[in-house]
Image (cartoon, rainbow, N blue to C red; front, top):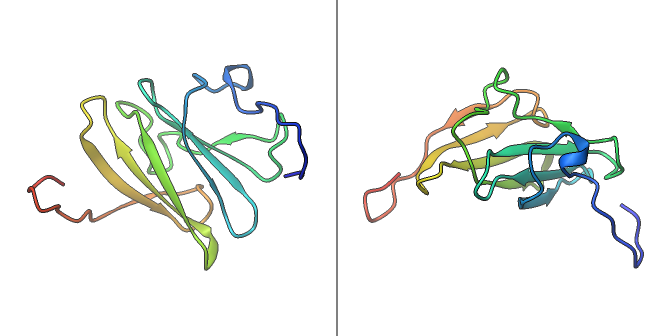
Length: 123
């Protein structure tokens, strides 16, 4: 990303995302940018190595272990020790956590990991 005083939207519905309501943004140790969408609408995760228009790739395709239906909000975390590792918590429209997922290859493949149970008994 360029340091400066001008910012412009690069990941919007004009760039093939389904909406423009960002839920989270993470920058990995190698400066890969991850943006999740889905507050009140279908959840998606996009990544970019530059942040420039045309450099965004959707990484929850439904065929790589990450669901692409019946999800909304997605919160993410990147591992500071390994730029290839990203975690994602998926929530549905009822505010129910539907899973915690992990990728070790920058979003090409995802696997569900066990979620802790909170003190109130919800997962």
